[in-house]
Picture 1 (cartoon, rainbow, N blue to C red):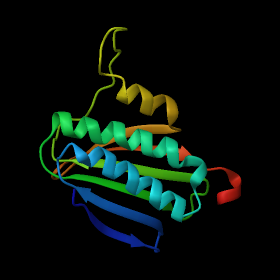
Picture 2 (picture 1 turned 30 degrees about the vertical axis):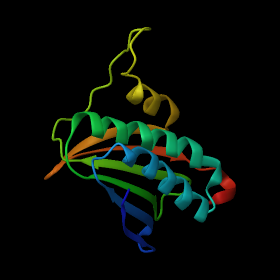
Picture 3 (picture 1 turned 90 degrees about the vertical axis):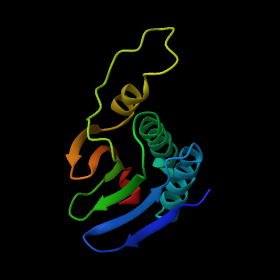
Length: 142
């Protein structure tokens, strides 16, 4: 599966971005890209949870949208101890968290994002929407 690294820059904080095609392999590839980048930044303590939550959001994008899926990792300048993660897709409708019944096979992704992140949300964009979450970083990696 092909994927494109859009950029890794070091201004206004640190950021890495990728675009993945709307293909089932995007989930695995996005998870690997996120883990690899966070390890490269020395953020192993949050790499597993970040990769898990990204895979949930990319899966939602694949189920509900068509077109490319963007993933962005950011450590904003001036805001210590935070990793901001964004997943964007072309679908303009914002997601809604729902309560899954015990026998439902899906519908828990946003609940997982809500419970495992410091906070999360979504925002409309000109070409779709972005769902984001924040993870607290351990003091020793800041």
